[in-house]
Image 1 (cartoon, rainbow, N blue to C red):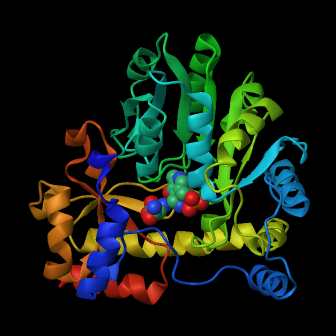
Image 2 (tube, protein in one colour; image 1 turned 90 degrees about the horizontal axis):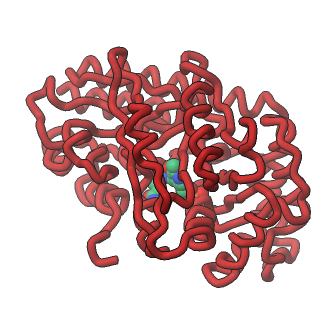
Length: 380
Ligand code: PMP
Ligand code: GLN
């Protein structure tokens, strides 16, 4: 694991703390999630829910996860066997890869990728086969279907797909998903989907979010992962989940029992409450986030950056070349000193770093006044 060093999020948040810069690096909200959820956690904590929950999670949360998947995505899950609670999406991703991959197996993913993917693939002794996302004519990130086809081979074990996608803000369209699904069927491989931003899609996206598991022939081969962190603004709680056919969920649990075993006893009932909130919570949260995206995008453009479209997530990507920048890492390390703002260099999320050298990522999951202050600093 030595080459993995310290994550960019840790480095950049420490830099923000040290310099007093506005932190638009690590993706965490600066306001709390729904009051009902917080009250339920406090009540559970005071009410004795403080010992090991069952390995797969408390029944009330598993039922709430199943009901949520039915309500939003039309997926029917048996809470007993097809749903497992994990220590954030991060643990679910790690446990899924460790469970499904033998050493030497290949994992097809898209770059830039969330940093834990490379680490988990390495821990499993597996090999990543990244397919590069590149801005197309309108700035939207796209992949070359031939490159995707070539990434599949006899050793391919699974596809790891993140949509809505961090860091680009891309939402994969049904046509793109069908290409991926077709290759999964053709090569008879599993899919692990990271859908932590499932609700955070803006109305101007090329398409709404579609879980890969809903495509023909995919339900039986897909482990779908999500988390409370992003949707309910509680990234520090680390309550996530995986859903899928019982054979995949139980394989993942076999690994998970030796990673953390369980976590978040008093938080689990609270996340069940959050998942059961009316549709208006989900649409309201996304609408608020969209306003903040628009605010930051306008400000970044005003400050002279070339901003790429963000269709969802907490993030927007900007090209530093109009400001004379060439290397995002250098640019981001200097930015707190130059302007008092922290961003994240996208290049660290690639194997082919050249493709992202000039790109940096900003988080807009912050209060409007914080975004305005960051913009003011960047402009000056
Ligand atoms: N996947 C993606 C794409 C993410 O951006 C994050 C960061 N929240 C995670 C997984 C990890 O989620 P969690 O904090 O629930 O482990
Ligand atoms: N998911 C968050 C991001 O992309 C950070 C998570 C972390 O710090 N590991 O910014």
